[in-house]
Length: 438
Image 1 (cartoon, rainbow, N blue to C red):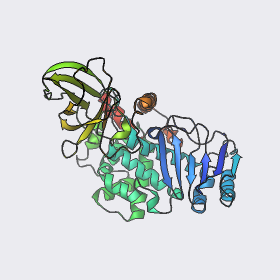
Image 2 (cartoon, rainbow, N blue to C red; image 1 turned 135 degrees about the vertical axis):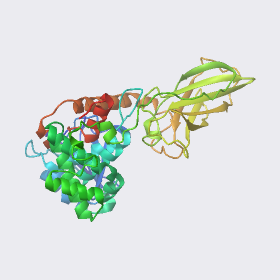
Image 3 (tube, rainbow, N blue to C red; image 1 turned 90 degrees about the vertical axis):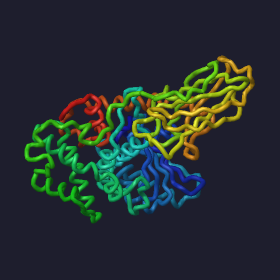
C-alpha cells in the first residue's frame, strides 16, 4: 500500500511534448482506480495505492506555481530540475536521485500522501456486505479530509485547485460529524484508550479551518468550547459520556444489511442459462453497488420462441432507492451490446429485457454482463473489465489489510506517521462491524 515519504529511489523529470513538466516515479503505474490523485497548485500528483513508492508522480502545467510545494514534497534537487527544464525544449529529460532519508522526509509530503489516499478511499473503497468489507462513514471521512486539506494548504493557492472540496466546503458538507467526533474524543480521553491524539489533532485542525473560513454554527461553537475547556456539550446529560459509546450508532451507521432482495421479476419461461457478470467499479458512482466480484448475476429464459434475460445486482446499503436507474450491458458471443434498465428493488438492482439472439442460444453460449450508470463511465473500455479482476482483488486485499491495522491497538505516536495510519472512518468501520462499544 502507499507508504510515507523517503525511499531514495531516483525519478525522471521530463519536458513533455505538450509543454508540461512530468516527474515519473518508478513502479507508479496502474489503472485509474488504483491511483490516488491530488490536484495541487500548478500540477496533478499521483500515488499508486497498491505500490510502495514513497514519492508521487507529477504532471506540472505551471512550474512557477508548483515551486511553492515542490521542494517540500520531492526535494530541492527535483525542484531545481523542474525549474531548469521549464525553459528547455520538449523532449529534454533528467534523472534525479532524491536525498536519502531522513533528509527527504518532510511532513508535507506525508500529509499530502495521506490526503490523496483519503480522497481515493472516498471514491474507490470496495465496501461489500458479501465480501465482509464494511463501508466508511462519509461524514467522518469527510471531516478528516477537511482537517488534512487545511493542514496541506501549502499545496494550494486557489480554491479551484481542490475539485474534491476546500476545507470550508468539506466542513459545510460533513458538519453532522462534528458533535459525534467531540463525544468520541472526550470518551477516549476519559477511558485513556482509542485514538486520542488523532482525534484531538483532527478536531483542532477543523476548528482552525472553520475559523479561517469564517464558518459559524452551534456544532462549531460546541467544538471550540470543548477544545478550550476539555468538556464538550453533552446532550445526554453530565453522565452521558461515561456510558460506553456505540461507534456505529454514534456516527449514524446504517443498520444491519440483509440480502432480502424481495420478489424476483418473474421472467417466466424455461431457464436455459445462468451465470455471474463482471462488476467494474469504474462504471458507476461510489455507494451504488456492492463491490463484491459476484455482485452481478443473470438468468436467460426461453419465453415462447424468444429469449429473455433477467439481471440482478446486489445494491450497496447506501444506494439510492428512486430517481436513478443503473443499466446492465449484455453481449452475446461478443456481439453488439443490449442495455437492460435496472431499478432498485429491495437490496438489489434488477431488470429484464428481450434478447435479439438466435433461438439456438444454449448454456454453452458466451454471455457477458456488466453494470454501469449510463454516461458515467468514460474511463472504462469495452472488454477491459475482466482484465481488471486482479487489480480489484488487490484493492480488496488492501482494504482488509487497513481494516486489520485499524483493529489493532496502536501507540499514541502512530499519527506522526501520516500515510500508514488508519483513518478515523476505518476505526469506526471495524468497531461498528464487530459491534464493539468504546
